[in-house]
Image (tube, rainbow, N blue to C red; front, side):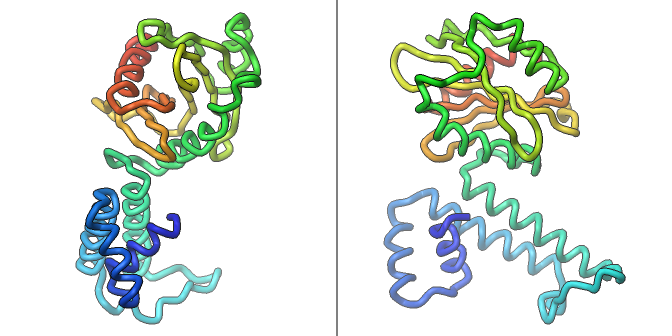
Length: 245
């Protein structure tokens, strides 16, 4: 979490001084996202307290390497980890609950593209004229066919591809230019888990970038760019139809 998220959590816990509390309350009056983070923190904290006996919060120390953690304490740590993930997800602006692998990937997509979208002179490693090479190179890395979808109906023109790494896994990054605005990309990463039946398209927003993402088989795909939610979802739906997900 960033410094603001930390202060919002501290406010929800009643841990700020009078001056800091007044600053946060002034922010809450005009910031819906901040209000949501505070409300979420209060709700999950309440759930955590209800799920764990009070004594689990007192004097908790990590067990020595040779000993196994007691079952009840293990459960407390697991719940705490889940709560931390939930709070982080709300802070990032996720529209739906996501699994840890998805969360990590979506965070990386936003972080990388905040930089890559401005590299208009060196946007790609392989150009659109090298589609066969893109498929053989990135397809081998991700164990799937890499066929850039036709997004001309959305005013997007395939420019080429590059590769980067997310959590130790290669990411195929397909870039599209447009007549007005910075490039839009489709990122693809392989995961260990198959898509859940009936899983659809989710959205997230971070660092001014809108994302729409979905999972097909063992791959997560994410559209990212300076778009509104409707535009990102429409591009994702068109891409998903073409890849058969």
